[in-house]
Length: 419
Figure 1 (cartoon, rainbow, N blue to C red):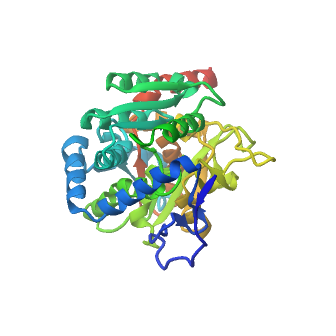
Figure 2 (tube, helix red, strand yellow; figure 1 turned 120 degrees about the horizontal axis):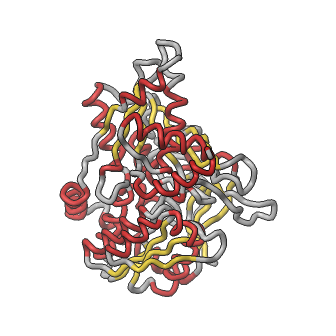
Figure 3 (spheres, helix red, strand yellow; figure 1 turned 90 degrees about the horizontal axis):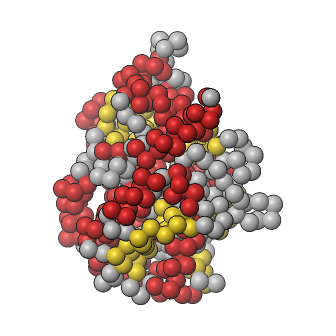
C-alpha cells in the first residue's frame, strides 16, 4: 500500500480553509491507496488544481447547471408542515421549516451537480469512460445522464440488494445508455459497489475516470465533490437573505457519505450563528448492524482510501450496516464531516427507519412533495428541532432528492410495519 499523507498541521483560522495540500482535514482524509492508483490520483489532483483557477471551466460548468440542470433550485416555505409542528405546543415555539429544493434539479437530486463537474474534468483529462458506484441509484442516474450529455461510456456498480430496492433507477440508468453491474458480494449494498468500482479503476485508470458520488474516498475526491456541491449552500445563503432578510437559524441535512450536507453546510461553516445539523441513519436500533451512523456510533478508521469515522467490529473490520434508505446504507462518512464533528462545528444525530417513514408520508400529505427516504431522515429531525425553536426562527432542510424511487419500498416497509 502507498500512503499519500503529511504531518498534521495546526488547524486553520477558518474551518473552511481545508484540506491542506495532502488532502488532510485536520487528522482526517489523506489517500490510502494501492500503488496502481497513485498516478491516477496525482493526475486528478493536477487537473483540478488547474481548473480551480480556470474561469472558462467554471463558466461552462455554471452554464450547464443553468440550462441543463435547472439551477438555481428554489427555497420553499413548507407552510402546512410548519403548521403541523406548531399544533399543541407553546405558541412562542415552532420555527418555520423551509426546503432547499434539490429534488427539482434535473434527475431529481443534488447528485447531478457533481457528475457534471467531474464529467467536464474527464473530458479535460482526455478520458473516454466513466465508472460510478451507487446506492439509492441517484448518483448512478446522474452519472449516466452526464455520460450521455458528454458522449462518454459509462459503467455503474450497484449492490444487488440496492438494485432490488431501487429498480426504477436501474431502468433509468439503462435507458440512458449505462451498463449497470450488480454486485452480489458482501451485504450487496453501497460499500460492496464501491469496492468493485475501486477494483475496476485500478485496472482501467489510463482511459477511465471514477466519478465518486460523495465526499468520501482518497484525496482529492472529498474536496472536489464538496466544491461542486457547494453551489447548494451559496444559493441558499443568497436566497435566505432575499426571502427573510437574514441567514436561517439552522440548517439540517441527511448524512450518508455526506455530499448533500457538505454542499449546503460549506458556505455556512464560518457563520457561527447558524446551527448546522447532520442526520444519520438510526435504522432499527443502536445495536451493531442495525444502523448506519458512523459519526454518532463509530470510531476513526480507514475505509475506501481515507481516514474518517467508520463503523467497525471488535476486530477493527468494517461492520455491517442497515437503513431503510439505500443512499444512507454506508459504514463510513466523508473526512470533512469527521473534522467538523471533532471541532464541534456541526451537530450530528440520528433518525430511525420508523421516523423517516413517518416523515416521508407526512411531507407527501402536507406539502404535496414525496421526498427521498434519505431526505426524510433530515425532515424527521427538523420537525423535532423546529418544535424547540422560537416561532420567528427559520430552519432550512436540504431536500436532497425526490422519492419516486422509494415509493414501492416505502409501501412495502409501511405495510410490514403497520399491518
